Every structure is written in C-alpha cells, then in structure tokens.
Length: 188
Image (cartoon, rainbow, N blue to C red; front, side, top):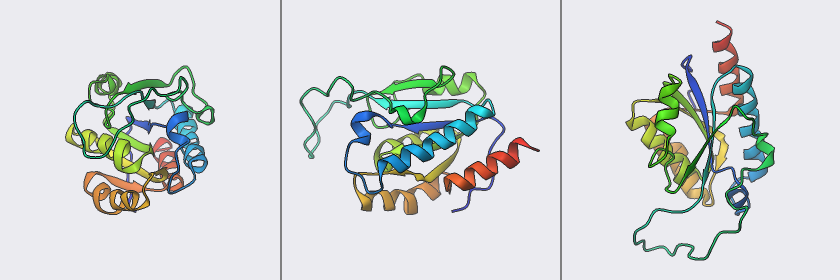
C-alpha cells in the first residue's frame, strides 16, 4: 500500500453501499465496510470536499454466460444504508451498469467541482469499484482506493483486484492512511 498524496480537489466516491448489496454474503463483513465508508464520508464533509454516493438500480443489457437475476428487485433494494449518514450536500448517482461513469452524470458532477482525484470504496471490489476505478483512470483522474473499505462477494476476486489491478490504476491505502493524509493535506 502506497498512498502518497491527495489533490486539493479530491472527491470521495462510495459504490453500492445500499440495502440490497450490503445484504449479500461478502468476503469481509459489510458492516465494517459501511463503517469505514462513513468515516471517510464524515471527514470529506468536514473539509467541504464532495461526497458521491452511488447506488445501482438495474443491469446492463446483453447476454452473459453467468445467469443474472430476472425477477424484480425488492422496493428498498437500491436504498442507501442509514450507516452512511447521507447528507443533503452529498451527490447521489444511480447507475445501471457496473461502472459509475457509464450513462450517468458523475463525470459532469466532478468536472463542475474541479475534481482531479477520487477516493473509491464500496461493494463489490471486482465489479462496481474496479469498473469505476478503470473508468476514472481512463478519464485522467487520479485514483486512490481505500482497500479496507471495500469487499466482494468473492474473496479471490477481491484479492485479485486489490493486488493486481488497483496498483495499475492508482494508489492504494487503508482508511486510516487516507484519513491521516487528508488531515495533513488540508493543514498545509
């Protein structure tokens, strides 16, 4: 893990910390992931930095080999979990694909605020988080991944993303490392 810097215009982007996703069996306890995401969000809010809460309300069309859910999601499936302490200043982005930039207003929301760097966390590491990290990297944003504030439904997929993919897309660190760096950055 080697998180070294945060740009002055950094936003936090939390992926799919919603009732339907958090209820799935995960490699690491979802409650811990939500708690770490909430700590990051509170710190970003205190500093007046953007907090983007992303939920997913559907899936991309097209054939896949792996079966996909075809029944209707429960009405509260996409509702963000209360543990995030959603605030009126938070930006909400609803996606219908794995990545949070595809067919959403995320790119424009960040650009309007001069954001050059995002910190990412959430569920699932190898799907929503990784897809969003790839897209952010391709768009020229600096990316930091809070690896202890994310998990996956598949432990091997989580490890692959954290150890093989993320170091090629940005910097990785723990919640505490990112919070300490945020404190130092804001005090200089």
